[in-house]
Amino acid sequence: MSNERFGAKLYMQSSTTEADAYNYIIKLVYDRCRVRLHDGKKELIRARLGKRMRKHGLETVADYCDFLTTAGEDEVTEVVNALTTNFTSFLREEDHLQFMVRQALPALLTKGPQRFNIWSAACASGEEPYSIAFYLWEHYSLTTGWDWRIRATDVSTKALDKAKRAIYTADRVEAMPMELRRTFFLRGQGDWNGYYRVKPEVIGRVSFHQLNLLGEYYFQEAFEIIFCRNVMIYFDRPTQEQLVNRLCHHLAPGGYLLIGHSESLTGLSMPLRCLRPSVYQKQ
Ligand SMILES: C[S@@+](CC[C@H](N)C(=O)[O-])C[C@H]1O[C@@H](n2cnc3c(N)ncnc32)[C@H](O)[C@@H]1O
Image (tube, rainbow, N blue to C red; front, top):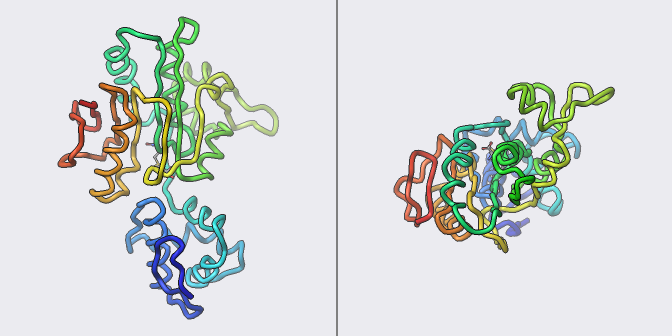
């Protein structure tokens, strides 16, 4: 049986070997979102697909692959959801948030309307865009005439569902300073004891959409700052270069691109200058 639906020109047969099956999954995820799951990640693949396999009563990754070739788009989405790493946290790489309110926005917003847009381009379960909103709320108060929006996108529908609900376990929220927690969260009561929810007025500043950074997309607005952090690390260099150049199109003149602390764009051909590691400005 041939399956070229995902550009994965592998031939899946009922006698698919486990090795073929892993290669098939690795290629499928790469074709879909350019995330590289190397051979060494077999344990991870098996563990992450375990829930799907149990749901369909399948014992091996090879059986699951045979099933996948006929299962349809929803099951493929489940695979992408399961295998894209969604780790994130509130106030992660917080120096970027400080840079945003102390340097980047003051430098950009010297004149003109008190309006700007931020894009959290791989927002996972929402902690990143909400953290951005907390900082903006304090430094660019809506009550003093500012108007700002945060667009938050991710390829994973599962992560986005969590982000939209904005409900987090206490351990994630209580790692933040008490002041922030009090200002921006509602504490769960009764059945919701042990959970917090971001306050509705903050949720209202963030719009969530599914978006594959390597697919087609268009925005009406330009962004003063794009946070594209801890996702590029999964892409190869040509893909990174292509992506960064596309992100530049969506930056306002003089706008900033922030990438993860462990990532680097050194050597890529792009219209950005490096201000310091992980902080780039459109030329
Ligand atoms: C490790 S999380 C990073 C979350 C957040 N930016 C941070 O730094 O905490 C990586 C996110 O990238 C998303 N992702 C992976 N490939 C993607 C793609 N091609 N397009 C959009 N998002 C993608 C994953 O679903 C995941 O939520």
